[in-house]
Image 1 (cartoon, rainbow, N blue to C red):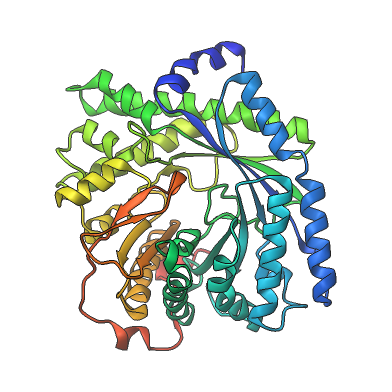
Image 2 (cartoon, rainbow, N blue to C red):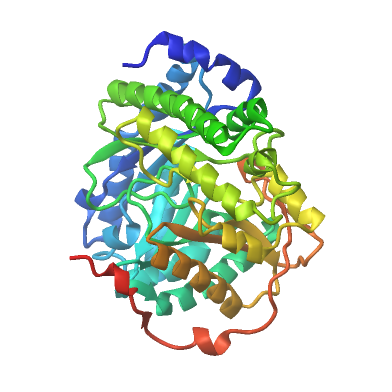
Length: 454
């Protein structure tokens, strides 16, 4: 049981250290909305979402007021739309109508984002999958709340390189379609390997097909809390350092567990998981980079960065699993560039490069996240970067993702402005040697030998 003492213990963390519940995400299955008639499909989707999520925002606000815990976002995730729309959507344009329906439903119930405009194509693509993927640039350009994801690989199936090649083109097209807003569409599109079914964080959230009709997943974050706690063990050994991270992660996760339990009870919807992820924001003192520097790095990107991040990620997870029986999603540490002031400063200082970030993704909880690159970067190069990151996930049996933003009209030295939680980002240089011949090969990179565990 969670008692009021635990709630009061978090007051200081909330007031002074940027602790927040980043999101309550309501997962809604749309499988019962499937229809071969496009108009009926859209009608059913709108009705299901607005009925199921009608009290989500108000309940979240009530919990905020009663417990004094900031809940930054209220979000929805749905069944991957490539599956839901397969019977009715014959063209990419048909899928765009579904995107607009989702956006309208999200606006009606008042949520910040709705995720699940997604396709799962780790082994191959159906025509429906391909149509949805090709619709993504238009869908993201013509909606406000839609988030999209494509899973192109897994440890069990390998990497679908046809999908990787297509996704490079789609990232580039999404950038062009929203070039008047610093290619903002790409900030709402993530390419995955080993995507989890229960992730509450955008842009990668969708409701897996093994989930129930509706579920409450909560994402909680507290980089500032961890940073402040580590100040107490400066100069101490690794044992004391690890214990402090675990204890702090435990407390932060208990806040998420409390909110998840309350939201589940009040909405009458089952609780799924708590995702404890150190997800930074542009706010001062809410940075994963600053945690790593507190551990002992002069600047993120210095030698030792990958080891420090590996330790941080592991201890966060160990503390989280003691605080909740249902820790899931992506739990660990995120390293987005644009959403983390310390990461931005490290790029400016020259200590953090794209190649070092790729190395860090081997041990973090996501991947190359919210990285702005020159708008002139080719689709093939983007596909190559995606392929590299997918390989890391596939071989290491972990979730990895890519959210690259080729900012049209900008180059290294310029800044891209996204606003809100998305922040701003310096344009990072990309290796200019080509990989076109590699990316143009058709087919699939096979699953690694250690995937055979039956």
